[in-house]
Image (cartoon, rainbow, N blue to C red; front, side, top):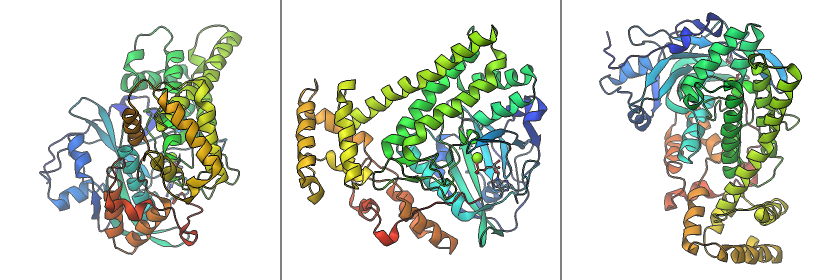
Amino acid sequence: MTKFSFHLESTYAELPEVFFSKLSPTPVNQPEMVIFNQSLADQVGLNLGKLSIEERTKFLCGNQLPHGTEPFAQAYAGHQFSNFTILGDGRAIVMGEHLTPSGQRIDLQLKGSGRTPYSRGGDGRAALGPMLREYIISEAMHALGIPTTRSLAVVSTGEKVFRETELSGAVLTRIAGSHIRVGTFEFASLQQDKRITEALLDYMIDRHFPEIKGKENKVLAVIEAVIDQQAALITHWMRVGFIHGVMNTDNMALSGETIDYGPCAFMDTFAPDTVFSSIDHRGRYAYANQPYIAQWNIARLAESLLPLIDGKREEVIATVEDLLNSFEQVYKSKWLTMMGSKLGLTEVSIKDEKLITDLLDWMHNNSADFTNTFRDLCKKLPGGELYESETFQNWFARWQNRLKKEKQELETSYVLMRSLNPAVIPRNHKVEEALQAGEKGDFEPLYALLHAIEKPYQDGEHLLPYQSPPRPEEKVLQTFCGT
Ligand code: AMP
Ligand code: MG
């Protein structure tokens, strides 16, 4: 029997029973470790070092769990492309919670671990490609300094999964601050029992917003905190050109982390209406729409919490509406500060907005690459034909004049810029290349890509193959959920 040197808790399973189903992962045939994130294991204090590679693999595919572990699948609901549905972990199981050395409670979740009571018609399994995609993008987001769930491992199962074609199966181990989503509150409110929603709210406050504990109106305080949290998160996405792809309410985590990497991708050429998801026909989750969708999702959270607020209905609704409307201002202010910082400005004011939007307009009109343009601006004199145009030169002169008005040394501005404008992102065509090779059993492109995105703010020769935008024939126009 394997000796595990850690113990997993299940405090979530102390919530009312409607919120979860206790069950174990379905064992897999021939597990093989594809990738293991040692630095993450070290960081969160998960000591797997005492386990042999076979034992570790058995653990990270769900074939063997520490004694006393009580795994569970979570129930939730969600608005998917604005349609309400009852959902739940259809192919994921939380193995348990682990306390990190700094005292943070994190979930260890297996994705692709077999059917659950929430599987609906699904097989409960996951294909290798999409699990590797989640691994790559979540680790890239982390390296970029963006709140995200993390990926501890991908284990191939030796079993086939059937989608449009036959694919290799895999299990991903995800680490998250928690898996409480806006959709978890929508599910709670469906029970028509205030005590159930309140139990979830208190649990979430404990885990994510301890500063709100004991506050007089905890519901309003939570909504306000979530507005701030999500506005900050979306601002980061906009900073690096990230498009989530399926911002359904069940894919918005109240830990403030980016979660559920399905048909997501980073933008190459700057175009605000960019969409990658093969199922997003109307562009609901396009790049530029993301802040509006975040606000829409928070409105669904607020609706679920309304019954917990005392007072006259009309007054309560008016207060909550005002609060929800404040999202626009909160977001705008964060976005302005961030975009200004991308241009080296430390005291950004509304007067700087035109400088920012003129650059973005120029990029859009000239099909400029989002990442490379901002990184080129970090060089004192960006070179290349694109930058020789009169429009760009005029903008550049205005920007340089504005930089001179900064209180700090010019070099400080450039240091700031280099810390926010990455030299490399996991470009979609490189991700696809790594996934396709992986499906054939060749993991070298995956490892090389992961190495390239480890330190995205440092230049280096090894980054060159990852910095060029795709050639026309390399362009990936759509990404798939891979469910
Ligand atoms: P996602 O698009 O990954 O956020 O998934 C939406 C919902 O479908 C979630 O409730 C998933 O648990 C469920 N789901 C996705 N794929 C499968 C599958 N292969 N088997 C069962 N349920 C699934
Ligand atoms: Mg999801």
